[in-house]
Length: 407
Image (cartoon, rainbow, N blue to C red; front, side, top):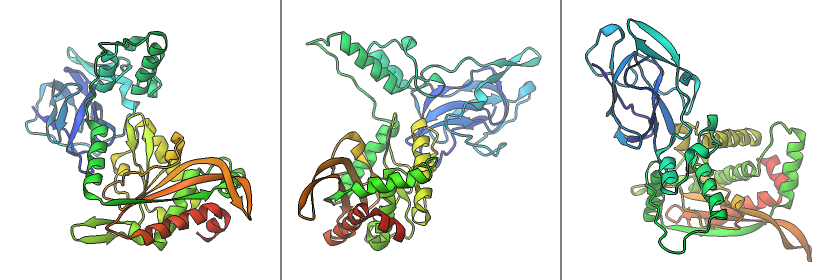
């Protein structure tokens, strides 16, 4: 009987964790029907079968990690005929990965019934699909049947469980002694983040420079831009991203990476931006950002942010960045010596925008101030280049109308 192997999910991924099975042994499946949901270091993925038949075996349990090329399911052809051999991704179907978290094919399931094939309604999707969420709930005594999920189709997410824990703690005093430790497996996306940050700190001799900038005019400029076209708003992050892309044209050494004994200055700017999601911090990438207008860049950032948060962003759009911007000001902090997104050479940080006393023409007046930081790889440039880039971004922030007109 043919076996369907876990396909190569792309972008150098070598393994995936089984989140949940979408089919049972004995089910009859059709071509391109999702059979299992797996979680990689990049995203949750529904894996469709490239052929039809009756499932005779499932390989792997929820929470188990499988290597690429390992068997997923064993299938016998419908009608009792079996075709020997191994079916790998791409054979029999042109649709290897049909999407991330797409529900279109969950509504019905084919099952053998005697000599006929009946189409029956599939059971409702489970309210919780992540083994990690189940474990956190179990370890903390949270009854999942009492929770209302805020995820797509009512799926219970980690944030829902943690909210329930917080609400319970508000009415039930925590024990003074004997509290048990919690152990959370470092795997999937969290492990990928940990590995990348460790590599960055181990390999990159980083340095950080920072400057306070008067963003009063920037806020006014953004308001005017959005008033002209309220259906396509431009975010502050996209304006800072636009200034960063322009700065990289003047200081291309920061759009680079170190490979062996060479500094590779990259021709295209693929701009990454940090986005906080329920699964952790991810860095979506807007490719060829240097060719985009301010509004096109804003739309690209907004679309990828939404996709990252609902889990539908493909792995290919989470890799390949050449420079990153990080708006940690949304967390209410002024500054941070951010860790460079290896193997990039620099990351621009944006602190919170807040009113402060500021000297203008010899007078102390209230102005809206933002702290900007640049953490850079000291191997690719010195402080003069890094300072020049940061000063350029700060000048654009303080004179946005003239800057946007020239970009």
